[in-house]
Image (cartoon, rainbow, N blue to C red; front, side, top):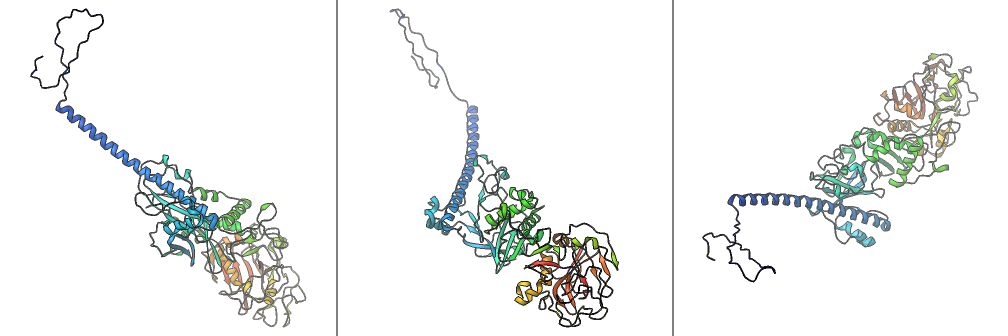
Length: 583
C-alpha cells in the first residue's frame, strides 16, 4: 500500500474470512479510509465549555466548604453544650468564661461573657475528663474561640457561633435548639447561632441585701466590650446589642430593658426571691415581666409569646413558681394542690397584694370585710351625713391620726379633747373628737409616737427599723401581723407600682395604677372642725404612722393622680382611711 499525501492517521479495517469462505480467495480490494480531526473553532468552543464548567465547579466547592464549616460550628457548639451540661452534674455550676467582662445592674453582676478559652476547657477535663472533649473547639475559618456567657446567679449559659449561611426559619427550631445543617441555604456571613439553657426571660442579681430580677431576653451581647471591663445595664448598655439565634450580627435586637415598663426590673426586695406567692408576689413578678416585654421587638419569640399568653391567677402563679424555682435559683413553698401559698388579711375576702419590691399589703381597708372592686360610687362631696354608710363593708372605717377607734359612724361628735397621756387605745369612747383650735389635734398634748413611727421620715424609717415596743404600737388598728405603714413605706409602694412617680413627692403625680393595684377606695375624709364628711368619691386619704410637725403624713389619691407623701391639710383630728402593711 502506497503512502498517501494526507498526513492524518488512517485506520484500516482488516478483512476476515468466515468458515463458509471458499478456499479460493478473491483479490484484495483497497479499504476505505476514516479521516478524524477538530477544526480550530471546535477547539475554542470545547475549551470555553471546560472553563465554564470549571468555574461552576469551583464555586460549588466553595459553597459546600462554607456549609461544611457551618456544620463543624454546629458540632462544636453541640459538643461544648454537652460538656457544660455534663460538667455541671459534678461541679454543681457552670464555669465562668475566661478573662470575662461583667454585665451589671446596680453594682451586681447579672452575667459574665467572653469565650470558651483553655481555662474553660481545662475545667471540663478537671471535672469529668472533659465531657468527651479532647481539644479546644475553635471556629474553622477564623480559628477563634466561641462566645460563651454564664449567669452570675442561677445555672444557665449561652454559646454563640457565627454562621456563614442563613439559618432558615430559626423560630421554628427555638432559640435553644440545633438548626439542621441540611436546611441551611447560601446567605450572609453575619448570622448568629445561639444555643444554651438560658430561659430567655429573666435574670437576677444581688446588691448587698437587695435582690433584683430583670427582664433579659438574651445573655449574649455584641457590644464589643474588651475583656476585664463591665457593662452597666442602667446606662442603656444593652440597647441594640442583644443577639438571638438566626439574627444578623450587625442588626442586633433593639430590646433595651431601661426603655421598658418598670425599667426592666420586675422584682426587687430584701431577703431574696419570693418563697411563695406571698399574696401575689409571684403573679406580680409575672405581670411586670409581661409589661416589660409587651410590644417589644422580641415579643414574637417563642418564650416571650408564651409568657404574654399567660392569663389568670392560676397560670401566672404556675409560671412565676417555675421561673423562681427552675430559672432563678429560688424555692417556692406551695399550699394544698401544689398552688403557691398565700395569706389573707383577717376578715378580708381577698388575698393580700404583693408588690415587686417585696411589700405585702392587705387588700381591704382597716374595718372593711370586702376589697374595693373598683365600682364607681356617686360623688357625694361634702355632707354632714355619711353618704357611703351603706358601703362601709368595702370602704372600711375612718381613723383620727394615732387613734385606734373607727370614727366613721355618725355618733354625736364630742368637743372635749382626750387628756394628756391618753394612748391610741385608751380614749374611752368611739365618738369623733372635733376641734377648731390649733393644732387641730384630738388629744390635748401632742404625742408623735402614738402609732410608733415618731422617728420615721420620707427619707428613712420602716417597720423593720423600729424598736420592738414601737413595732407593737404600729400594729393598731391593724390585725396581728400587720401594721400602719410609715410614710417611706407608702412612698416605696407607689414607686414600685409606677416607677415614673417621683419618690416621696409632696405634689400631685399623674397616675391611675396605685389606686387600681392596691384596690384603694375614694372614701373621702371626716373634717376635724365640723365633723362633716368631705370629698367622698373624689379623694382617698390614707394615714401613715409618720408625724410631720403638727400634722401626720398621708397618701392622697384621686382617680387619676396620687401624692405619695402629703403633709398638707392632714390635721391629726381628721378622719382618714387606714390600709395595713404586712410585717
